[in-house]
Amino acid sequence: MTGFSLNDFWKVIKKHLLVLLLVPLLTTCFVYIVEEMVKPKEYTAATQLLITAQKGKQGQSFDDLRSSIQLIGTFSTTIQSEKVKKEVAKKLGIKKVNEDIQVVTDQNSLYFNIYVKGTNPKKAKAVANELGKVLTEDFSKLFSGMSVHVMEEATTATPEPIKFQLILGFVFGLMVSVIFAFSMLLFSSVITKDEQLRNLGLTVLGDTPFKKM
Image 1: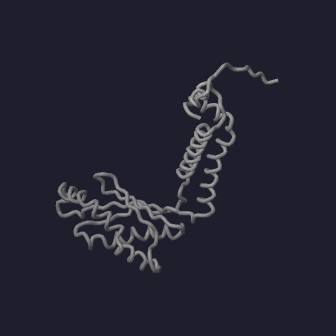
Image 2 (image 1 turned 120 degrees about the vertical axis):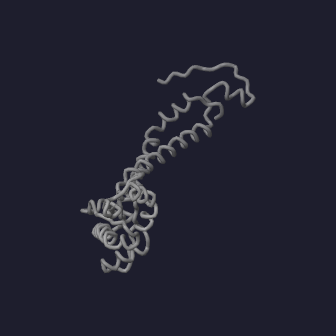
Image 3 (image 1 turned 90 degrees about the vertical axis):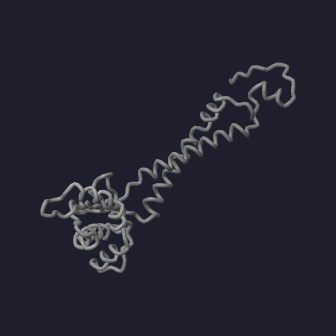
């Protein structure tokens, strides 16, 4: 069909409404099954650290604080470094820290939120807390005059929410439904307008009313 209107599209939607609604529901269910039953469930443990410049005789100066803020990127890289991970693994008595470590900090802030993500909730929590201990002990050796304080320890590891994936699955199914409706309309061989006959080179003599009994 060529030259279709919004009204034609709406008629197709009404005619195949059940199928068009079923597709996004099926894709959402598929995503849920994959996330909950197929993929290993991931957990996140969080701890918060504060990095400060050690006070001298005159206390912590503004220049010390400004220098510390300028090194935020370096601090973040150090926290996620292999050297620190190896030290954490050694303290926990494991071969390697396979968990994903993310460091998040606000601009111009020396508070560091550390998120440890893994498939084992107990191990993720242990790595997060041990990471804080290792940094507290060794940070001043790497950065002279700096110290780390654990402001909040990881008390539990929470499962990763799948809300975003479900929404994405529903939107994908909705797009498939819209494409399907357009395809039904575009490739339909049913003639509903005089214009369609004229486009085929035929002459329209008249029409006969149809009444459904």
